[in-house]
Structure formats: structure tokens, C-alpha cells
Image (cartoon, rainbow, N blue to C red; front, side, top):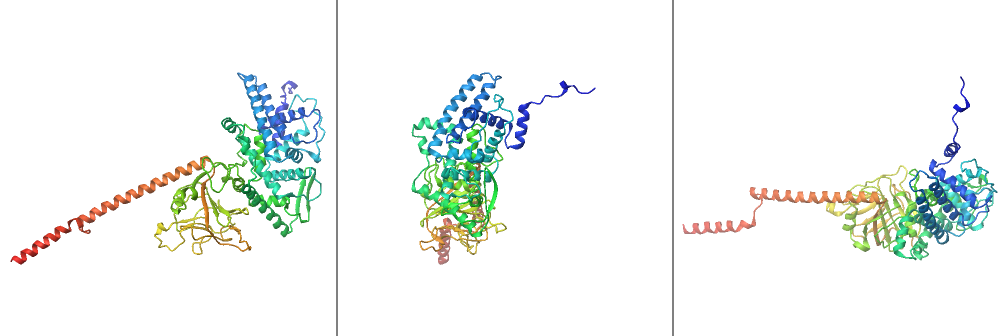
Length: 584
């Protein structure tokens, strides 16, 4: 007998929609469900058709995302107290709205909401008139505009750094001109691009730490949030300017190579054109991409992280993606960095994933004194990644990042998870060469060999033992130097040039700091290893002392060592024998 119609399983339209969208976009079913409801709420708020893009888009997106949580709470009839959950969710929505308004008004650049919506979510630089489907009460119906919305969210945060950079780049163009001309090479101001990334990083920090910050706000008062407004001090602006200069150098390098420029917009295919000179301080998308790959691989994650915590505030960041984590100094101060969300820390967080999250100060010359013994003691045995930062009297700030355990050795050691950097007045990262030497790090105090090894005594990175390391901090801090090239790291100046433009080699340390980095868990484990190493060292010293004492007693008893305590007895015996001889 053939199968009857009742035997055929009925297809659940909700599951079918999630299956189709899940195959197309990098979201799980819970995320897709929330995004579908967010899109539906956004359509409802704009009437029967979407209006033109506006500056309230970010606030709308956040609020309607929270409203989708309210929908979830409302339909959760199997819960014990659904009304309580709904009330709590609405309270969270009101609190979150205040934070988003502050971010839009005081943190992000003007017109960013309009620019983001146009660059990521709108076709042909205009909002397409969208008629709400007749089955709008069913959020899982087919909707081509839903696909565009999901595609915009994907490109903003889940489709890799290149896609996020393109949206950031287009947003910068739109914030200046409010239109994008098709088939024309586009450029943005290097400082505008850097400023956008910096502001997005602060906004991401506020969104990811929102619950904790609300508690601190109750203790600090109404002026609490003002401390997060991007600083316009000279030191803060100089660090952003250093990043901007490095981005301009990438554009100049590409111009010299005469490579074709590739550009795209939401309404046109990718087009190649002959490289055309740009106005001063303007950079192309290709230059931004090249610069991000070499100097700031986490720069694009500022947008990705912002979008995640905007839409999914209660969800952890996807383990397959790398978030942008603003460095936190905790209770430790710094003579080199300024305020908590300083632009210098932003620069470091862009360089490596290991430089985000919690830092722990291991040594500071301003706090611990200019002492090599204290510097080496802080490093030796520490098993986690470390950052050595030097500010020299010539105005430069530079140093090195390493991920290997510090130890005393006459030889170089370490691995290729390290780099040298110049932070100011130019931001440059010198990573290990492909196929280069393995002279990564070096720590050789004079006490190790009593000076008999005739090798450089101090801490170094790159270079060789005979010709001396590329970056070297001597034990006396008087003969420190840094060169621009070696066989381990790519070429690049660590020191700023002289006023006449000549390269420098020697420097005088103004301040030096070492930090344990990598986040709470990594730092705590590395500090624990350092404690164990110190205990082993102290135990070995005690054993050595006991061995020396026992050996001394054995030598004394055997007569190998004469005791001055009994010399007078011999002298007395000698005189007595002499007197007896005289009497006889």
C-alpha cells in the first residue's frame, strides 16, 4: 500500500527557515532566532516601509534586540514566573538604552549610525522600500530583506577582518561625504580611520563590561561615565597620530610599488584601477588592509566586538573569533601610560591578541628604582607572555613582546611568538622573519658567569652574542642601544631619528616597565610558576649552604683546614718544648 498524505511528516516552517539561514550565515539557531525577531521589530518601528538611514540606527538596533528578548520571555509560558522575567528584561532594556545613548552621543563619531547602516545594511546607498509581509506575526516567513539584514550583521562581525575593514572604511567615507561615488577610487583620512577604531574599542569595552560598570556607577556618582569619553590630551592624540603615520607609510609604500587599487561598494562589483596618487594624509582600502595585516591585526575586531555586544549582550564571544579586548592595568599605575582607556593601550591591543585583557605590572623603574637586579628578578621564572616597554630621553617609546619563560642563559632562546615595536613617534611592529635566525631573547646577568664569559651582560632581543643584540638593555643602563636590522626580526627603526634626520643607535633610559600580559588566567598561572621557581632557587641555596658546612667540618676533622681557634695551643706546646730543651 502507498503512503497516505497523513503519513508524510509536516515540515516545520520555523525549522526550515533556520536551516536555510544557518547554511548561509555564520550564526547558530538561537542567534538567528534573535536576529529575525530584531529585524521584525525594526520593521515595525519604521512603519510599513523602511525610511532612509538615520543616526539613531545603533540605538534602534540595540533596543529592538532587547525587545526580542522580551518576546522570548513573553512566550516562555513553561517558566514558573514568566512575568517576572519579562519585567526584569524591560528594566535591563531601559538601563541599556541609557548606555547606548551615551555611546552614540559621546563616544562614537557623529553620523556613525547613518554611515554604518548605509555601508553594511543598505543596497545602492538608499533604503529599499520594504513592504512588511502579510504574515508579519510569523517572524519566520521568507523575506529577501531579512537576508540583507543578516548579511550586514555577518560582514560587520562574523566574516573576517577584511569584511569588517571594508565596512569601517565605507563608514568613514560616508561620515565625510554622505555618499559613495561608484566606479571611483575612494580614500579616507588616515586619522579618521584610526579615530573610528579607537572609539569603537571604547564602545566595545563599555558594552562588554556594562553590568560591572553599572555597579561602579552607583558608587562613583553621575560623573562616572564622563571618564570614558575619548581623551583629547596631547599624549593621547600623539599616540593616535603615531598610528596614523604608520598607516600613511603603508599608503606611500603601495604607491611606490604601483600596485592596482581594488575597491568595492555595496552596489557594485570589485573594480581594479591603476594606482592614482591620493591627497596628503588620505589612504586607500588596500593600504588599510596591508597596514592591518602587518601592524594592527586586531584593528578590525573593534567593529566585530562592538556589533556582537550590541546584538548579543548576554552571549559570550564566539570561540572561533578573536575579540578586541582593551588592556586593563588593574590597581597598578604606569609612568608611561595615562588614563585607563588610553590610546597607547589601544595601540598595543591592536598588535596582538595576547596584549588584550588584564595586565600585571612586574617591574617599573619609577616605582622599583633603576635596578637591573630587580628587573631581572621580576622576569626570571615568569612563564607567561611579557611586554618590555622603554621610554628613552630622546622622545621614543619602544620595546619587545615575548611569550617564552625568562631564564638566565649565555645563549638566545624563545620562539617566534614575539616581536619588537616602536610605539611613538611612529607605530611600527617588527615581527620575526620567515626563515630567519632564532635569536629571539637573551638574559645574561654578569653574576651568572662572574664576567668570565666575555659576553654582553644584560637583556637583549635579536642580533647575535658577538655583534650584540639588536635591542640591548645593559646591566648598568648606561650602554643601551637599538639598531634597525638583524637576521631575526624584519627591518625597522626602534629609535626616532635625530633632528637632522640621522639614524640613532644609543639611547638613555628615562623609564622602563615590564608587564605580564595575556589575561587573568594566563597571568595568574605565570605568577604561580615564578613563585615555584623562586622556591626551587631558595631551596637550592639552602642545600648548597648545608653541603658547604658539612664539607667544612669534614675537612676540619681531617686536618685539611687548620683552625685558628687552636693555634695558640700549638704555640704554647712549642714554647714548652723549647724551655725543656734549654733546661737539659
